[in-house]
Length: 409
Length: 81
Image: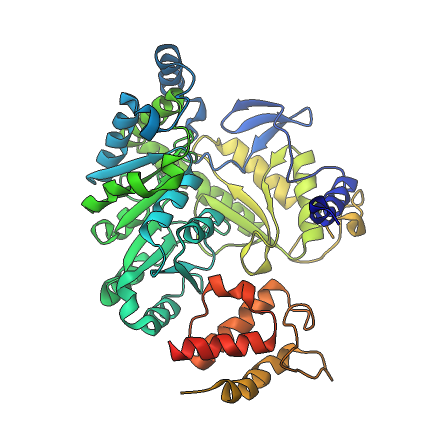
């Protein structure tokens, strides 16, 4: 027995996937053409699985800002902010994201994943309790583990279950961190934030909202679900990422609590990693300006989301309950989901294939993420490609070129 | 306060619907390996037990719960607070 033997089952599953023609978890974007198009397998493909909600990855202002920063500040920072110092541009980015939220305190992290690790592990440690939504992203699970707090899951979006568990904690509820997401990444549903805020206040707990998928998407100014729900002042801390609607990389936490600043001194994912490189900081700052100056991007995103949701619904697909930029078609089996995913790709449409254990309730999903940059024509093409697939809601037939028994497991 | 010996028969009753016909649950029965529960079923079982005993089982403790006995002892510990 060697340490490497544990990879044998993964190797077997991967090899089975390859027999079906292509590995959906290892695709190559041969040439990225725009926020919504790329060359994949030598073919021009419409991208509907990017989380590029506002389509800013090719925005000329962002590209110009990045190029200037590269020329003026170099390619990287070569170390952490605590050891090497902060570049002025790191401070400016922190001010930009704090001002965007109207919050006094902001900390920038090198990735969104690290933002959750850094904030959650610092806020709740040994002797504290975390109540997290069961459908939370892996970075939330990992951040909770890193801090050493006691971790309890509550049923996804079930405020009664959350309250029951707060009650069970007794006095410990005052040292409890509740963690939820603005929009959940798999099915695109939102946290019932007004009710969550109510129970949080009733039991004296602390609330963190991860707005990774809702920043730039929800709220009058695009600040996310807390803004849309009108509870920003009752949320203790917001975490988010620059890598989705802002088209960059990096993450952040913002708060109204002055103590939040001290996370810089306690957060290992902040201290022991290289700070964001100057070009990334510059493109992020430019993107924050754009989402403030151009609310029409958000309106365009929602028009596209409605068009795709309605189109897929009319084509007979079972979708997540809420219309939004994440639209997930639920497919009865993973064999069928893989076959459909592959056929979509062959027809020039790239969506995300999501299968258990990454999905809630063991669902198999063809997950679409809509962009403001999609044209009406592209959305029509996507709907048309979906509608030509064997009807997932009516039968379980497989496209003839796929051997179901050769697929996963 | 409920003790382990009070908890065990209740636990057997709750777990019974998750076993194959004719399977006899014992204290040493392994929940995943012997009952063949997948991760979704484990979640369902835990939710049921948590409500039954009005407790929350922390995720941190799950790796140490392999058998019915482990689960019973965890419940006893949590009930004691």
